[in-house]
Length: 544
Image 1 (cartoon, rainbow, N blue to C red):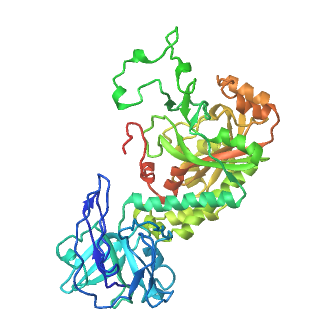
Image 2: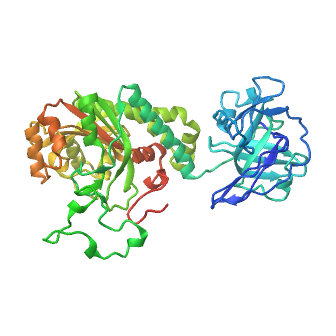
Image 3: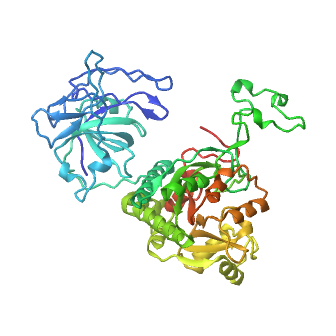
C-alpha cells in the first residue's frame, strides 16, 4: 500500500469535524486566519511547523489561491502536480479569481489496475477524516478516508515530520479531519486491508447519487426532455385526498402560533373562506408531477420529471415516507406495451449502472447489509420480465399453499406480501409485470379497457420490495375521462386544463411513476426506507 512522508494539520472540533491548517512547508511557512460562522469556532493558531521530512519534497510555488487551486513544480514538469492549500487571500486591487479545479480524491489515486503505483513519485495532497491512527515508536500509520470510496489511504508519518507534534499531543484521533502532503511511494510492507464499516448514510448517499445520475443519463440518451413540475398544486393526481395543505390563513411564524382559531377567515356558513388565502383557493403540496408531465408531453413527445413529492399518509412503516422524490416519464404516441418496455429498459439500465460503477459499495452491501443482493440485482438485469394479468395473479394467489395475512379475492388491492410471493416464490426471483387492474382500485386518469371493469395499468414487481413501478396508458377520450371523474366525485372545474388536453385533441400516451427512495432501498438492500434519504419526513418526525 502507498505511504506518505507527510505534513499533518488539525484544528478545533465542531460538529464532529475538524478544520485543517495548511502545511507550512508547502506554503513557505505562510500563516493565515479564517473567519467562521457562529457554529464553527476559530481554528487553533499554530506557529509554523518544525522539523523536516526524510524525503525531500519537490519545491513548489502556488499558482492559484484556494482549496482546489493547482500548483506546479519548480522544475516545470507537467506530470508532477499537487494542489496548493488554502492561504490568506489577497484583497489588493487587481487580484484575480483562480480557476476552479476538481480535487484529487483517494478513489482517483487508487483507481486502475495498478491501484496507484503509476502515481509513485507524485507530490499529492490528501484531505479526509482519520479512520485509525496507530502510533509506534518512530513512525505512525494514519488511515485516511475522504468519502470517495470505502477503502482508506495509509499515510506513514515519521516522528520528525512537520506537524508530528499534533500526533504526540493526541489531537489526531478517529474522526479528526487532516490534510496530509507528501510524496507517493511504493509500500515497503505487505498490502493491508482495513475493515471499515461506514455509516449507512455515507454509503447509501453514494449509491443514491449514482442512481440519480443514471436516471438522467438514461432518459437523456433516449431523447427525453427533463421538465420541472410545480410543487404547489390545486389538484390531486391520485384522487386519494392524502395531501398537505398550503395556506397562509394559519399562523406562519413562531410569534403567531398562539393566534386564536377565530382569526381564520370564514364564510357565513362557518366554512373556511379560501378566497382570502394566498392563491385564492385551496392548494396543496403535490403528490405527483404526472398531470403536468402530460401537458409537456403534448408538445415535446417524451418527457420526464424527477422531483420531490409529498403524501400525508399516516403510515409508520419501513416502506413509506411523507416526503420523497419521484421519477415520472410520459410518452406521447404510446400504449401500455410501450410503457412496459420503457419501464423495463430503464430499471435494467440503472441497476446495471450501479453494478458496474459502484462495485466497492455493492460488495459492502452484499457483505454487511443483505447477502446475495448482487445476485438479486443481476437477476433483474439479466432475466426476462414475466407478464401476467391481475386476474391471473389473483388465481395464482388463491392456489398458493400459503396463508396470507390479507385475504385475496378479485377486486382487492394486492398487498406487499402478495406481490413478494408472486415475484420471489411463484417466479423464483424474476421481475414480474402485472397488468389490467380493476378500475375501482386505480386512479381516474387510467385508460378503461373494453371490458368496462379493468384499466390499462401495470405494476412492476421485484423481489424483497414488491411493487417498484406503477404506470398506465392514460385516458385520452374526453367523455370517458369526465364520466370517471364524476364517478369519483372529482371537481372537473379544478381539472379544466387537464380536460382541455383532450377537448382540443389528444394522442394515445402513457407513463409510469417510480419512488426514487424505494429504488435506492431495493438497490442497497436497506430494510428501512428512512435510511436511504438524508432527512426523512415521517408522521410525527420532521427533524433537521
